[in-house]
Length: 268
Picture 1 (tube, rainbow, N blue to C red):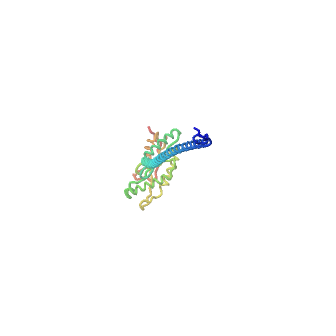
Picture 2 (picture 1 turned 90 degrees about the vertical axis):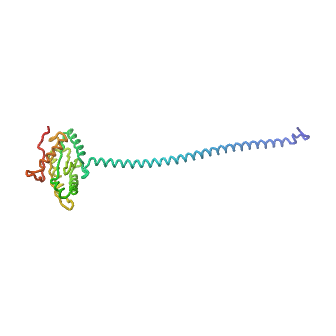
């Protein structure tokens, strides 16, 4: 309704427009403020979720690191255990295949290598020789000096024997004071004879045992595959027989630096 001055509600049109503009601006500002507030709430909610996710991730990371440390410790323990078992297995294998006193290969390892050498020689048409020897009068040495010193003498014999052989040869303590040397791929008796000479020369020097100088002599027998025997079992038997054939002279006394080759003994 207009008053007497033509004004609506006592306001001029200009004031009405200004008021309307202020209301519009205020409404727009309120809407913008509400939009900002809603956005701020969303950001805060998003930040809260991110913080929760980060906290959970850090917890999981800590747990994972602890598990990794535990796994690393377990792996380290297993590696140490594996190395220990491997050492024990290697030691057991060595003890199973070597003489406890001298450290030389024992009968088991000798038979295995001899079997392989004979098989290879058979394929390649070559020869294998066995040099079988023992220490003359060893029982008397044992009785006089005692078993401990007798063992020391055998250890000295083993050390010198190993030092005079090729890498391909095998020196074995066969039992007691008996030793066997396996010579794969020999040319014949002459090659074995050269090895005999080396063994004698190496073992001839006196041994100092418990303050006593001991000089030993050897009885040696040699057999050659396939001339003397057709397999490794017979080869050992015939080398042993060859050694004992020269062990004593006619009076029954120990021989001095004797050796014998089998005179082509046949094996039926």
